[in-house]
View 1 (cartoon, rainbow, N blue to C red):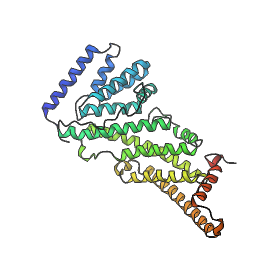
View 2: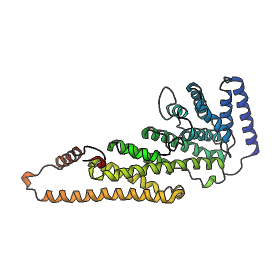
View 3: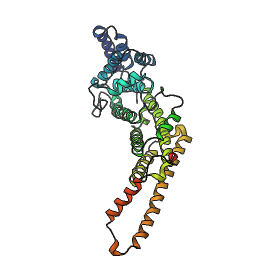
View 4: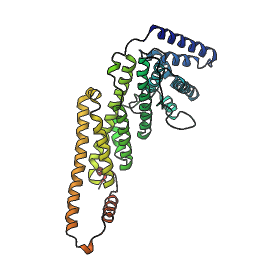
Length: 347
């Protein structure tokens, strides 16, 4: 990404100054400093990420009243949804990402439930285009992808019950998670691992960053998403480990759904070589566990099918029943035998 023309830089500076002057005239004096911090964090400069000082000022607002926090989130979303400048849009999304990772609970909560009337996909910017220059055109692809990624991140966090990759998590979160997960029923555990799979699939569709080499704005996005990827893989690892404990008591349908989820995760592996190198030992362990559980389920199904075929050939024709009848009876009996999700609690 080459340096844009100086004229565009000057126009961007003028727009930023005009926005700040307008805010000084129209904003509530009680929230003026926060509005100015937002504008200064989301400037038109296409090469540098938000200034940490201004981000910290916005994050500090999370310790104020819910009304003040709501105003900050509303101003952020309004700026994101009204701008047609790719640099401003990416910085708004980076700011939202920092709220997920470092914001107070009340700030995270307000971002998660915005708008207050309910609804989803408020970050959806699938039609975003800034064709001012070749640089802004390329940054536009990052805006579209990043907005969809953050929407997936918030949705996954809702399903998991905590904000993924949040710095507010306790030091003992992994152990707490393992204890919580061991009490989940299979369907809920499958829902969580499928949601994590959706998030990792979205990460794997990240735009090619080779053309963005040296652009600190894009590098900031890649770094933040890379941290989320580590957290996602860790959460997958915990759930795959739990499923290893449950293999002997999974229903046929649960086994099929789990295999499909694991195959989706494996398909992402080859598309994430750059991110996977960050923590090679962790990733290799997780991929090995995924393959191991998938293969074990496959072997169990093959052996079970062989037994059913032998039984089928030994039956007389007058005692044969339809395949659909035998299939339904087998699944029903297997599912009914499961009294608790994890065999560690069997007696």
